[in-house]
Image 1 (cartoon, rainbow, N blue to C red):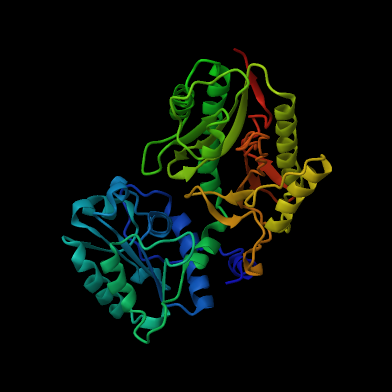
Image 2: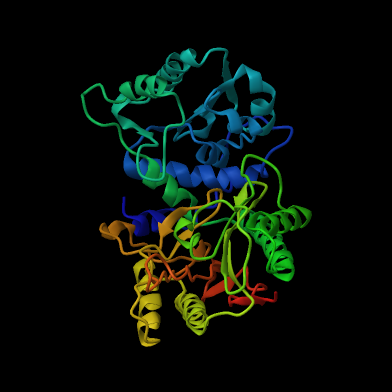
Length: 425
């Protein structure tokens, strides 16, 4: 699937007047107009790909299309869910555990909510519903590609996909279709993302103000996390996540959770993460310098901040994501540094932390998306210079979360300056 063509095909489809033939849920995740828009676009993409239905099992696409919203996803490996999404929304079926039947019926608009007692019932139930809508076995889409999984026990997943591979061929992969569907955010989604980013920046501001030598990484993160919750991060299936590394021994563990390591004079503290507001995620990264900072560390931080700003300055509809990466690389080279910008300099974000498009050089030109209004991206060109004695001298990056607008972009995290914050001893 060429993403540019797919996005063009669904541009302007608002779903007004689409008959979902829904049940009115008692506690919907979004107003029904939102699901009409989403399903109208899904139907257009299914027609385009000549697919009769999608068989979905992951939390994000199931929630996105059906509205089913439950913390039961946290134990989903024990109580999985399947959403059969055909071209006609009136034939859609949500198959959920009897354990969560009330929440499934109370949050989803789907007219048919079927339940099971044993996970082993799922293949037969899915087959029955697919046969009832006349779906052709080799015209079903599944979550099979990068960025997707079938969130079912393998034996169950194999039985379900076998229904679509009777001719011995691999069933169609729907992961790219789902990415195209969710890549452009609606105003209602953008509102949740704004609130999520606002809560995250409040948490970071609290952490920056409190950071000092002698505290541990865990203590710093706890201050950030508690402030995020106070300012609007919500509890649910999306955990608040903030990782933190400080000091030379910790830099190579850049994605490590916060530890009991004590912040010390001269450390550059790397703090990365965010939380969710009603399912929609924030992701921000800042650096804190403790005490007496080495001149070379200041220099790397300045260039990293400038590289982020260069990407933001270039960000507008029509620019391809690979060009954004090259913009950052050119800035770093012009600043006189020999280090390469990290291979991935950003990503889309929404219901998931990483969504398409990825800001990188793509082997497949179909993945090199032209940015469009309504995308929400995190831009984060990374510098990881080596230390003369081995290992890394630091991880230098400032991540901003941005909304693409008609003539450029809005930096949603702009109230938190993208520069090295200096903390005293």
